[in-house]
Length: 357
Image (cartoon, rainbow, N blue to C red; front, side):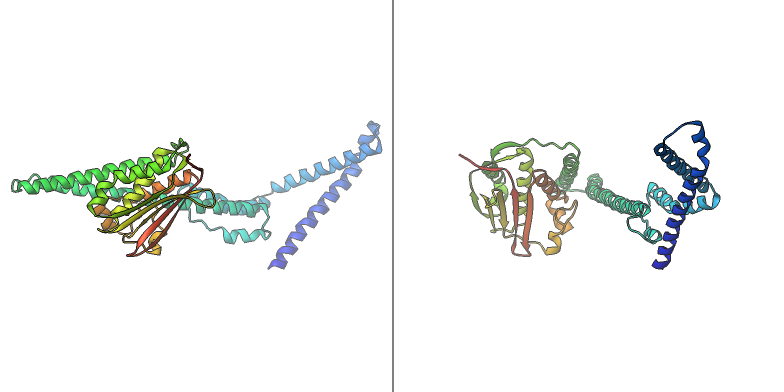
C-alpha cells in the first residue's frame, strides 16, 4: 500500500517537472519574435524565457483545476473537513478524521496538519462542552435541593395543627436552606470573578503569621465546642500577597479541619520558611481523612466525597476549588496527604516570603 502511494506521488512529481520543462521549451520558441523588436542582452532573454515559462505553467495548472474531474477530486479532499466544521458549529464534536488523514501519507503534508488541527479543536471543544453541561447540572442540583426543602416546609407551615416547637423547627430549616442558597450564589460569583480575564488581585506585603492567628481565633467557638487541641507554631514571616483573597484560603482550610475532626481531636497549624526560600503553611488534623481516590477530586467544582455529610455541614463543593484558584494566582501550590480515619495534612507552598524584622 505504501509502495503504491510512493509510486503515485513520484508520478505526480515527474508529471509536474515534465510539464514545467515543456512550458520552458515552448517559451524558448515563442519569445524570439519579441526579441527581434527589442534589443536585449542574453541575460534578460533568459530571465524573460524563465518567467514566461512559469506563466505558461501556471496558466495550464489553472486550466486543469477548472476541469470537472480535478474539481471533484479537490472537493473529495476538502469535503470531510468542511463537514466536520459544520458539525462542530452545530454542537457535534464527535469527529473522527483519522482514516481520512491516512490518504495523504506524509505526516507533514499540509492537509494532514489541517486535519490534525481540526481533530484537536473538536476534542478541546468537546471537553469544554462536557464541562459546561456538568457545571449546569451541578448548579441546578445544588439549587434544587434547598428550594425543595424551603417549599416543602413553607407549605407545612400553613397547617393549623402544628405546635409552636414544630413551627420554630421548620422555620430554622428554612433559614438554614436559605443560607445555603446565599452561600452557593456567593461562591459562584466569587469563582466567576477569579476566573475572569481581570480577576481582583492586589498583592501587598503583610504579616502572614498575624493573619493565620486572626483566622484561628475567629474560629474559636467552633473548636472550643468540640474540645479540640490546637498546636500553633507560626514563624514571623511577611508575604507579598492579596490579603483578602488569602483570608478566604485560610478560613476555608481551617474551617474544614475543624468540621471534619471529631470531638477531642487535634489540629496543628505550622508556618515556616523552607530551604527553597518559600513559605509553607501546614494544616494537619486527626479527622476522618480521605481515600486516594477522593484526594484526586477534592479541588474539582461541586465534588463531594460524601454528599449527605456535606449537606448536613452546609458545604456546596466550591470552597476548595476557590482555594486552589487563589493559590494558583499567587504562583503557589497546595498538596494533600490523607489517610482514612487517621487525618489529613494540607500543605500550602507560596513564594515571596521575607523574614520579618
